[in-house]
Length: 121
Image (cartoon, rainbow, N blue to C red):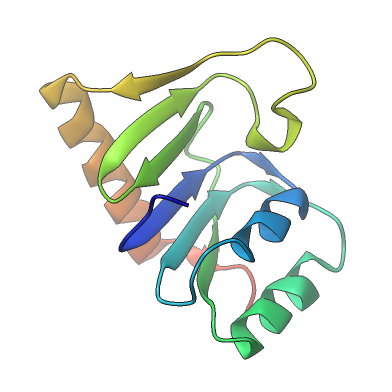
């Protein structure tokens, strides 16, 4: 909810629980999602409904990432645990601050956002 501009969520295993949190954001916040395995079957129907309500959401399919990352206004966080399962077991989220790692992560995410296919047309 602290986002002022945008959120990028990278999670190979994603479900619609993430979409429920988007309602907490103002429609001015852009949300970009990179995932590989997405469920349930009506995930895109829910995305299209959010879009019709004014939310700016892109969902791109990629198998590039193993770990999970969350970017809020260019502050990057790393999680070994899937965001859809947070709270179910002990896990840790760490801020990514090392400049070389940040540059590599930003470049890779930007490449995937530009070159991967949109999952929910």
